[in-house]
Length: 478
Ligand SMILES: *Cc1c(COP(=O)(O)O)cnc(C)c1O
Picture 1 (spheres, rainbow, N blue to C red):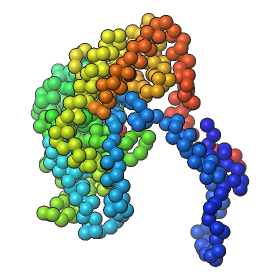
Picture 2: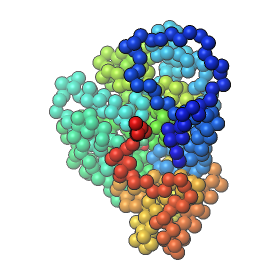
Picture 3: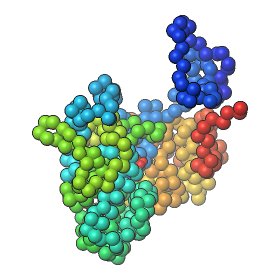
Picture 4: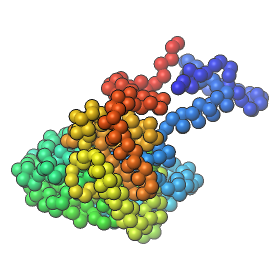
């Protein structure tokens, strides 16, 4: 489809306003642009059609089934949007003084209270703007803690191979050496390997739980114990909190730090690169290192302070405030019962789909899953030549979003499904029927899959080229 720049025609723009009859005030010479702005010229009708067409090319959770494993693409209740759009929240400025933004500070303070309650932590920062950003913040807390004790020898961080890919990336970005430990056949951390890796050069562990294959680490207390005994700290990647919220708390599993993905678990629209929030909670002995400013409740009035040994700011001001507000609205409307029910429903839905699909498909791991599960299409590919990629492409023609593919890396031809709690039984049954039908079709007409998708405007983009040479701006010819 053509871009606005390509549709532009000189003089095509329309304005409904009468010509300006006020004298122009010209800016000082040194502030003027050297080249005129190159704005496309289109009529309002053309603009309106252009954006309506663009919107119709997008597929989101409001269009249909979107089981993108690891991303928790749940439906985001509209009431959260309404609250985030309230004038008093939207039109304040972060440079206003504390006494003029008491309501906003109360939001941050309440959010800290609720999310500490949900995670079993003592304090929380809302500055990080995404999950990976929260991880970096958390690992910097680990570093600050060890350095504050004069212990500079802890240079390694343990990361199981079933961790989310951002975990090792974070540890390495924070200057640590990553020690990868393998998982056992059941997809869980190999405790002996962990024991062998734990030593006085270990700063801590980063544990994704449930891990990326959708399995709860049943030896979790043993895991934190081993790491603590070696003098390290335990970091909980809580981006998958949808699987445990309202039932179990990382703090009670003896983790020292946790991050949440408000844009996954706590209902902020995501997936299009919009603002996110990856708050980090910690136990009290780490609170003095948190990024600032943090908000303190002085019995009904609020002020912001910098923690005594703060690692500094990790983002401007208070983080993505309106995302925190949406999340707060979400937990307050659900209440503690609702949070627990959402979690139970998410896990039930995933197990339902897993069981039904297992009539044809091969699961990467047997038994119950948590909020998501992994299929392997290695067998199907061997038999028919249809790969996980081909299968995902064919799903596009069925008007449903494909699952996450080729992730986690430890499973060949992986498809990872996470239906979330907001899908109905009917919708999941419809999806299962489609998967079954395509499974049969792969055997009778594999060629159909190699040329899929057949109905979308973009078919098979060159993903390597797109990643290596992204075109992020329009190339004007003159
Ligand atoms: C999504 C996810 C992350 C990264 O979060 P971003 O907001 O995408 O940076 C980290 N860990 C896990 C387990 C995740 O699912």
